[in-house]
Image 1 (cartoon, rainbow over the protein chains, first blue to last red):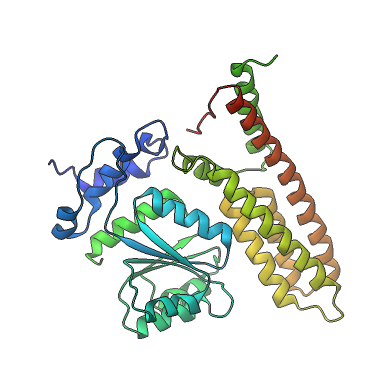
Image 2: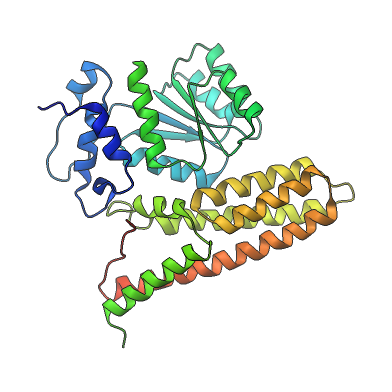
Length: 181
Length: 152
C-alpha cells in the first residue's frame, strides 16, 4: 500500500471543502485516509483496508468527559465519524472511577467546568494515578489564567469549544507526532 | 402544488436567512456535516437535546433569581453551561445573550440579571421557532422525494 505523505493528508482532511466530509461520498473513503495517521506499526497491521460499506475502525479509544448532554453527543459523534471508539462520563469523578475500574483510553476529552469534580481536579488526579493518556482540555473558557491552570494540571493540549472535525484531526495529528498512544 | 425543486429552493433560502440574521453560525454546518445515512437524524436529535437542556436551565435561572438571597455563582454556572451548549450547536444569538448575562452576574446585579434572562429567553424562543420551521421544511423536502442540500 502506498504511504501518502502524512502532512498532506492532514491539510486535506482539515480543509473546509474536503469532499470526504460530504455525505455523498462513500463513508469509508474518508476514513481510509485516517488509517495513515495510525500510530505505530502494530496499529497499521491491525487496521485492515476495507472495501464497500464496511465500517472502518481505528484502534484509538477515547473518553468524553462533560456534564452537558448536548456537548457529549456532539463530541461522541465527531469521534465516531473519525472511526474512534468512545465512551462518555458526566463529570471528573466518573472519569476517575472509570479508570479505577481498570479501563484505559488513548484520548480523553476533558471539559473544565463540571459539578462534583471539575476538569482541573480530574486531570491532576488522573496524572497522579499514573494515567499517561493524551488528555485534551475542551472548554469555552478563554481567560488565560484559567487555561494556564488547566494546562498545568497535566493536559497535553487545549482546544476551545466548540469542537470541530478539524480541531479533532489536529489533536490526532499531535498525538501521532508525539508518539504517544 | 410545490415541486421538489421549489421546496428545496425554499429550504436553501430559509437556511441562508438564518445564517444571515445571525441565528446560526458555522458550527451548525459542522452538525449538518455529521449527519449521514448512518445518522440520518443527527441534527434534529442534538437540537432536541439542546432544547431540553436549555429549558431546564432557563427554569433554574428564573428560580434562582427569585430567591431572597441570590446565588450569583450558581446563576453564573448555569449561564456558562447555556453559553457552552448554544455555541456547540451554532445558536449564535443565544450565545451572545449569555455573554452579556455573565457580565451582570460578575457585578452581582439582580436587576441586570433579570433583564438579561428575559433577553436570553427571547432569543432562545426565536431560535426554537426558526429551527422548528427549518426542520419542518426539511421534512417536506424529504416527503416530496428530495434530499436536503448539504452545506459546502
